[in-house]
Length: 144
Length: 144
DNA sequence: GTTATTTGGTTATCATGATAACATAATTGG
DNA sequence: CCAATTATGTTATCATGATAACCAAATAAC
Image 1 (cartoon, rainbow over the protein chains, first blue to last red):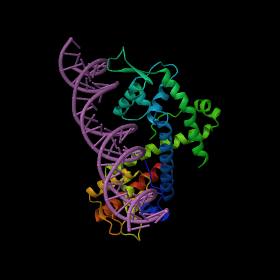
Image 2 (cartoon, rainbow over the protein chains, first blue to last red; image 1 turned 180 degrees about the vertical axis):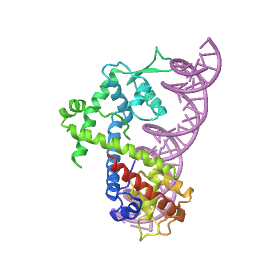
Image 3 (cartoon, each protein chain N blue to C red; image 1 turned 90 degrees about the horizontal axis):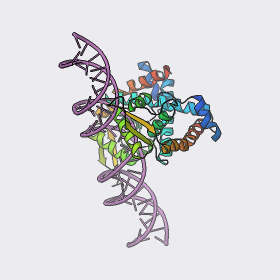
Image 4 (cartoon, helix red, strand yellow; image 1 turned 60 degrees about the vertical axis):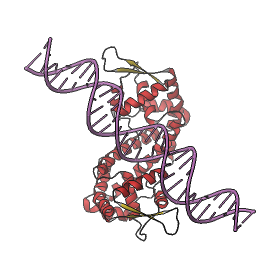
């Protein structure tokens, strides 16, 4: 995350960036993007927290739901669609299971693996939070 | 942070966004921005980690250094320039002091407060990492 | 000038990201 | 088919973000 309120001056960027072949306008553009995104992510996490979710917990529900031809995904498949580390995925799935938003069953075909499905409450939670999520994203882009 | 690899389809965004007055193009733009920024932030944290810093530790050094008329800043002043919570600032300053990149002295005028200054090593570390930092930012914007 | 409020900073605790090391199961190679 | 390798998940540990509750000092109110 990037929380510097006042970005470096053009002057300062030029002093340090130009001699090393960096483009000052690009540098400032990247800083602006990181700053905007950090503020937006913070806002979204607050929204999700108020709905008993987090960005990652929400994304897990989304990727399970948006595979219409599959009843369940394995933790590994979910991790392939969301690039967080394996331990983070393990922990997140356990927390979603604890909150009864997903079920985790043993896989009959591969004893190392699991089958993760949305519960009705998980689907409901997803549908309850999705519109507000999109609304925040949309408003953010309007005001910038 | 936002780590969904494949963004939702236009179709899906329209289904959920439009009925609630959200603009699908804006939603997708916001998702793209969050995704790009998350990847960039991850890359930058890796760069800083290899130099014994983190984004926040680096920003603290920067804001102290870029106040040419001041020899020191108080923790509160630093926190005003970087919007992280107070406990995070306390912990970060202590870690920088432990690594001898800053000094923290009691303030003579206000016994609640402190005076934070860069050490020569802190300034050196800053100057060593700044060009590479700008280079990463610049390259990121070129390739996108 | 004493009391109440505000300000500056810390501690305790939690959430969410990471890596390293591990156990167990599946697969591949000979 | 047995040994070696690869794949799937988990545990342990750490870093960096947050809030709540607190102490001590400064300031404001009366």
